[in-house]
Image (cartoon, rainbow, N blue to C red):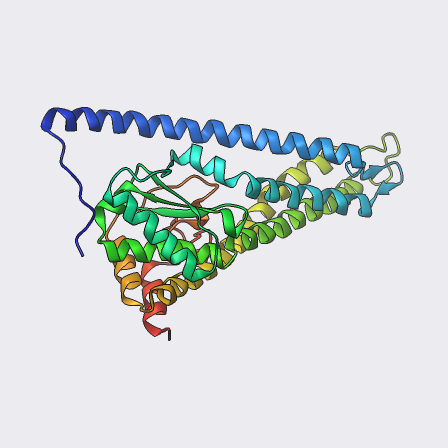
Length: 320
């Protein structure tokens, strides 16, 4: 089937369009940075207030480390941040990626995209997601806290560079993510890892501080050893946790590829889409949705997506 119709600009408009596109990229990058900072400040403020009200932030006492209070604090900070991020994932993704939700299709191409999502969602047994388009290089993502009210968004670069069949396979991949509950699964995994980081860094920090201040009874509060050790371990263990989360994310991508093949009743469209992506330059997505995109980052340990070649090989060897 032919690719979606793309009408060429006239020379003058095209030149203006390139300038506008460049300005828009800078604007989107700034928006993402501002949104990232504001979101994290808001989450930390909310969780800090809740921790204070519950009293779990007072895990350092005159008698030593209160492990029960610390565990409560770690669980609150670990899962609280992950759950809040999940609940606000749709509006954050729309704003940061510049997604235009298709309320009423404006042309045949948009009508086809919406109908394709509807058909695949029904087959997967989930509610109709919102459907959106965003400007950028080839990519797509799904996000949302609940299976029956998710968002599927595809980029203009993806629509321009693929055939209908390949685009349908990409959309099926994203619908499979939703049907598999991947957003919730990744939230739970992130929450567990966050909890371990917060708990272990403070336990080890307290132990190091106690060793360094052995015999010093002048001050019973945490010393510089606790603060430095906790800060360093938050960073080091955070990197280790990110590797674990990325490993789960890569495993989940294979499942979504297989899910796309099952939804389409054949593997070749997804294989073709992946092969096409392998020759493209996939767009960078906002951090909040990058793990759920069709194509992901580079680097073996921190990559949220497996290599394209490995994904194609897994599909070729899979049985429908």
